[in-house]
Amino acid sequence: MVAKFDLNDDQVVVIIGTGAGGGVLANELAQKGVKVVALEAGGRHLPEDFVNDEWESFGQLAWTDARTTSGSWRVAKDFAGLPAWIVKAVGGTTTHWAGASIRFQDHEWKALTTYGAVEGANLLDWPIDGAEMAPWYEKAEAKLGVTRTGDRAGLPGNNNYLVFEKGAKALGYKEVHTGRMAINSADYDGRMACQQTGFCFQGCKWGAKWSAAYTDIPRGEATGNLEVRDHAHVARILHDDTGKVTGVEYFDKDGALQMQKARIVCVAGNSFESPRLLLNSASSMFPEGLANSSGMVGKNYMRHTTGSVYAIFDKPVRMWRGTTMAGIVQDEARHDPSRGFVGGYELETLSLGLPFMAAFLNPGGWGRGFTTALDHYENMAGMWIVGEDMPQLGNGVTLSETKDQHGLPVANVNFDDHPNDVAMRNHAYRQGIAMYEAVGATRVFPTPPYPSTHNLGTNRMSAEAKDGVVNKWGQTHDIANLFVSDGSQFTSGAAENPTLTIVALAIRQADHIASEMAAGTI
Image (cartoon, rainbow, N blue to C red; front, side, top):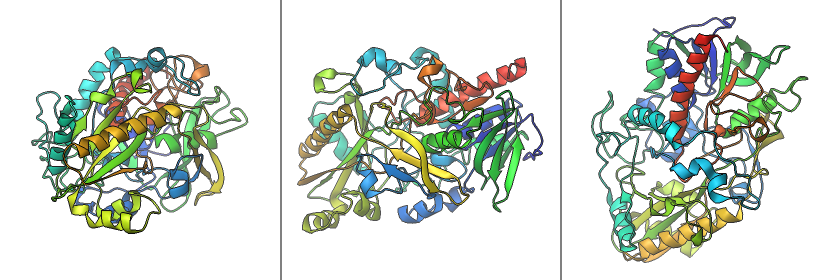
């Protein structure tokens, strides 16, 4: 049965956001008998609602509320109002993601120790490590049904992968396979196997790709301990005279301001909306925003060092057929400063539909070179670069003068590449081009980074309060009953796609919160 909790029930845990962090946390707590109210700004969409059309899907799922952008990154020029592709729906960005689910490497938990002091970077070691996270990663992999983990087989390779693999092996790469993906290669956990339909970033119509929207959320609701309120746009978090948080104000679907009391509040609104909410919750006691005694709320934004390489061949590839992303080269993910940068990167297969390709191949581009490339779309293969970018104090979220539909200041996102990011991207471009040229590409196109899909940092985890926003459990240093439960708690970004780590941290956090509640400490 779906729970219905009173607005004055001050014993509920309020979770803001229902994605990889919030949705998983909500279910895990509900399974432990904890009463949970999850507030989601968007609506509810299930597999039967998804559309295999990128532009229509964007209109259905994307967070299109106002945002502003600053900094030297190209996104600020090409997509000033859209610095990121973030979902506004139950399940969050787990409805719109590739499915890549890769553990951090051990050294990536200790970025400052491993890389040393990098000029202009604000590196810090995580207060946790790979050994501590290993059992939580195992639980996350089982929850998501990650291929090539446990006894789960890998996905088959489509044409895009076969071209990618052949080029990788021609360059001598060894760690090449169809990835560790949260997409079923066989029926698993009540979800069917992937049908290789294609155009599947924007919601899997078969439910083969894990999403909190149709796994964790309904399972949590079935316990009777979870109520999800959709179209609930959170305005601010409230606190008492002692600084303890006491509830959350939000606008309901009719635009009416409501207030839900809370024993604990967990913020899981993505790396833009989570710091924005903490900053918009400023008070006379917390004039710089909640949990911000360090001044680190909104700072150290990371988006991964990204870019893409596309190539044209004499014969059709039809890269869109089959899974959008199920292919990876991991050889470059190592830390090897002899390449001219610290940290590493992954190369992953990628395909875009023709309308998105026209938008992102070279934003603002035109002319014969551009149009003839699109003319050869059928013969195109593609890959995406994802690498560790450097946290910088100047990169991050502040409150904009622009207001949203409720009169609240929106997030301004400022970003400048670090020289390490540029060196890594250029190295990756060269390797990607070489892979395709090694297997007969007639034209190769390195393309600039798109609006961000990996949004990290801005409420980072730290051992000491002065260095970050939350401790090793995602609990804010300043306020014991306020937690951060999404990718904004990342201390560093590593080279790997972040969702698996967000899920593992959420499972671990749920265990901690439930234990502390039982002990009466929070």
